[in-house]
Length: 474
Image (cartoon, rainbow, N blue to C red; front, side, top):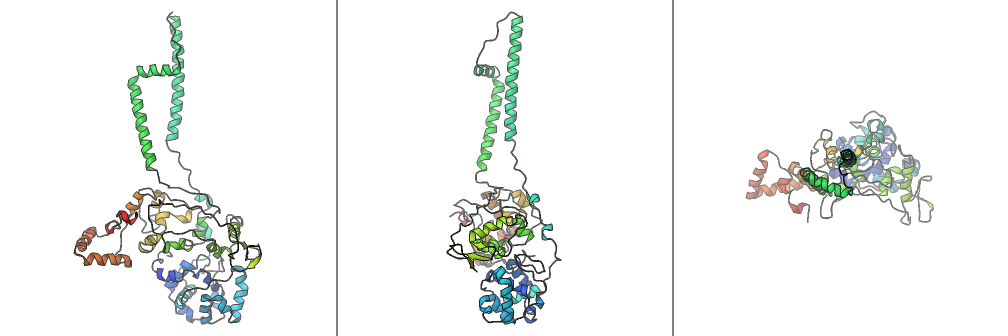
């Protein structure tokens, strides 16, 4: 349901993208009825799932921050102070309200100050309404029980193909042939000796093979033709695999397990890869994004403290005191210091397109409404990031409605144009397509093209220029 509401609430989500840390105050609760009852539960659910759910649960379960169950009875300040606390927490604390002071003393030492948020009062009311009466909160269970384990997620070993077996059989055949030729020569010499005939001359192996090839030139010609054809096929297949990187899975400096974050903790892909909304690139999350949760979560379920400690080392965080250190190694700072000169985390890029190819995540995610799984596969079952194989993506058709089944290898030109040929467009789904629709209707030739497009009761990306070279190459 989270995924289905993304595009519905996109405008509100952009305005409140950073409300994740603001959810910290939820752990304190709200007792007043007004702000709880005035909001839109459905809109609040979309905002909460997109911005808050990666660290908070609407249950008593503790994730990266306290759970929200029972908070209705715990808030001890006014509605106005609640809004001010979210929009400018430090200014709200300076008001001197006793309850706000208690929140600061209880949670800031562990979770730190949240950044002043741009969310409006209406956005906050919607989230509060959802937190009070969430329509889809399931009983608290072991989140990991519904997700694959690391062993279950292990990828099958890459097949070596038939080539290696062909070479092994060829070597065995040559050994047998040479052995048989030696035995035949020995038997022939023995028979010649008994018959009083001359022995076979001692010739080098090269001359023997040459003589045999001439005597059996028809068979040799067929063998040569076979190997030439086989070599041509292998060469063609090799050329067609240039640029195909299906299954590519580079090692990373930190063992980041996608399933733990996406499946077990339900962190949405776009929380870490926020640039997918507004940029050509989905982006690699900064260490500050990691710290939104890992300032509190200091031990992982799979790797303990080892991997998370690498994040702390990169950003200069002292887990013991829950503070950042400066360039001289002194701790006590509440926020990352510019003077800290630690080494950044050098992630290895997984999905790489040629320099002459233009691909915009924003165009596909916002305008096209594609799910991440359309191109990246079932990330919630991955260990490290990898380039999904097209067959793996096709297996998700029933799991993710709207996913397009394709046949060409992922990240190839054939894969892109096949998708553009099959992907259907709703001309009322966005302002971009509405404008295209208007131009087609207002132009006589365009109107004829529109009728032609609609002959099969659908319009594809290809029909609206999705196969034009300049769409991707310019």
